[in-house]
Amino acid sequence: MPNIVLFSGSSHQDLSQKVADRLGLELGKVITKKFSNQETCVEIGESVRGEDVYIVQSGCGEINDNLMELLIMINACKIASSSRVTAVIPCFPYARQDKKDKGFFDIAVDNLYAEPAVLQWIRENIPEWKNSCIVSPDAGGAKRVTSIADRLNVEFALIHKERKKANEVDRMVLVGDVKDRVAILVDDMADTCGTICKAAEKLIDAGAIKVYAILTHGIFSGPAITRINDAPFEAVVVTNTIPQEEKMKSCPKIQIIDIAMILAEAIRRTHNGESVSYLFSHVPL
Amino acid sequence: MNHTKGGLVIFSANSHPSSREISKRIGERLGVELGKVQVYQEDNRETRVQIQESVRGKDVFIIQTVSKDVNTTIMELLIMVYACRTSCARSITGVVPYFPYSKQCKMRKRGSIVSKLLASMMCKAGLTHLITMDLHQKEIQGFFNIPVDNLRASPFLLQYIQEEIPDYRNAVIVAKSPASARRAQSFAERLRLGIAVIHGEAQDAESDLVDGRHSPPTVKIPLLIPKEKPPITVVGDVGGRIAIIVDDIIDDVDSFVAAAQTLKKHGAYKIFVMATHGILSSDAPKLIEESAIDKVVVTNTIPHEHQKLQCIKIQTVDISLILSEAIRRIYNGESMSYLFRHIGLED
Image (cartoon, rainbow over the protein chains, first blue to last red):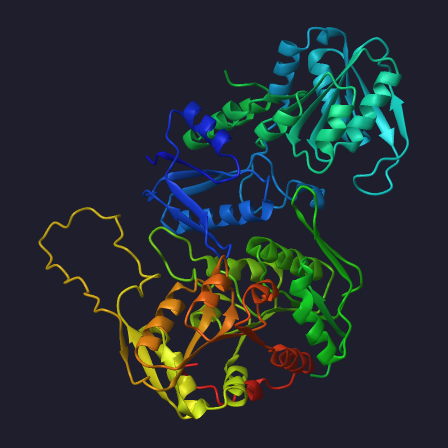
């Protein structure tokens, strides 16, 4: 019966360590470095022969370097006769360029959802959640917010806009009522944050008492942090699929939802051959 | 070939302007404008490639030179190749003068054979042909299941020696380690000169240490006597001569500087270093400037303007001629054998 061996790429050592702690394991020994000509070099430091290998690497920071590192690590493990290699990629890079998620791989893909963790955070941290309104910053996220709104038994709203080109926002129209409520914006990615900051202002204008933003992946590139600091948010909550320590120092509004236990549980269930679908609606303790 | 050709398009997939130099030269030689494409990195560090003209039914040539960010260069190339493939290009030829990760082509401990990984990725992305130059190991051609043309820079380097070194007939071609002896020999034969080989300690930058993944042997196996390295010696006569060290790649210059030191001690009065690919990373220019080397001659397969500013000893030989000739011949379906005449087995 193979054992779990967990390796971490250099993109998010912190998250990998948390996952390892949850599984009660030590991270596998691996040396990742760059030669002076900037070529990536990977050396696995322990035997993986016949083992069940998991490699945690997030698509953040220097994406091309991290992607190459991941590919080389997977290749090295396969050559070293591991029994199975699974890549754990909390934030999948280049996802926006394709605009299609599934059906692209020849291998099994488990796309986990942050929703259960988001619901738990809302119930624990927003006192007025029963009188809140879940808002989607664009029409495409309607399914996501209605799912959350139904589980919390609250109302939802969405913002409809005309976009001229990517990362630039045009006219915004609010569909739904947020007057005298707490508005909770929910989206999957926060990159330059132009959309959600304008959305926040719109919601305040429409009478919302407080505005929260909950986003799965906090990429926060370019002017994102400045925009958030200037916008009327109570808090901006992201998961730790992408390391956030640096950003939190310059923006006190950012809070973190830890998803290490979801990843750890997924790894454990995959290893034991159990069903992973439990994780689509429950947060592991 | 009888079918009508859709036309020739040449793209440069580099985002960095200095890396596009050689593509511009090739375009000039062929009398073709470079294709319109936008390659850049977004704020979140993802690479984005936007092709701004039609490639449907055309023969596409993508020129990609390796810059400081190797992994980004690779990604740019892959995205561009795939974009051309999904836009129904007739054929996609990659022109990658220096093939990256070619030094990681052998199994090291629990490493990965990255050149094989790269080759698989490029073929999968849709590349139908590859033109490269002086592959570090010729066997890398076998990693691809598409045709690979491994052009040689040696004719240009030989021409430099004959034209720019006045008393080259009093020179000796030197191999800085036994591994490059074959290359030195092939140069020496064509110039009708002698060779010398440097052998000794401090030569093993790439040798592998004993691998720790084994259980102790159950029977007593006679121990291999560990190789003893003699002190650095020069086999061959360099006294009173010009020494020309030849190699394919010059990256970490420590071994070259040490070799130059040794050659000076043995009586060489001028020392040249000639290499096809001048990576010259980190503080190579400074070390060269302070060393006994008189000149370093590299080709423009890898842009090195930055290094030239720091060290006046570096000279460039332009090889865009052979790349443009290769592109022309492939596009017209002509034979490539002219480009490989006089190339020996050792080159």
